[in-house]
Amino acid sequence: MMESYRNQEWLENLLADIWYKHFFDIPQHNDVIIRYGRKAKRRLGSINRHHKDQTITIITVNRLFIDPQIPEYVVRATIFHEMTHYAHGFNSPLNQKQRHPHSGGIIKKEFAERDQEELYQKQKKWLKKNWPNILKRYF
Image (cartoon, rainbow, N blue to C red; front, side):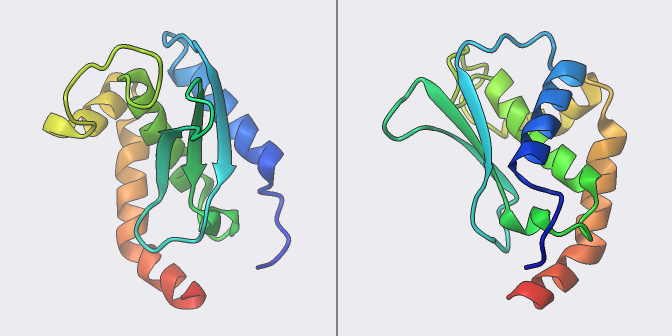
């Protein structure tokens, strides 16, 4: 894979920007780390507790996102999605708001409530049209 400006610092700045602009009402009661995971066909991101230190939350995004041909808004929407899980108490110290992390279309609702429905729609549209070609190139 080519050298990219989409390094660890870029990822951390994206998370900070999203938290500051859209999740400012959500307290950060623990360390939240963001990193690239492996290249994956279907999983864009995930949120987990650190296996050795349960006080640390780790947001992992698809390593394919290093590729600048994938629009930044696709990466933003993925981080926003994982931040929604954090805000709802999944793999975070906050109270869990519902039993299942995706129940009742909660992710889409959160995008809408935080005035980011357009971001949600843009990501879905781009992925539907372009993700198969990205996968062909890497897998």
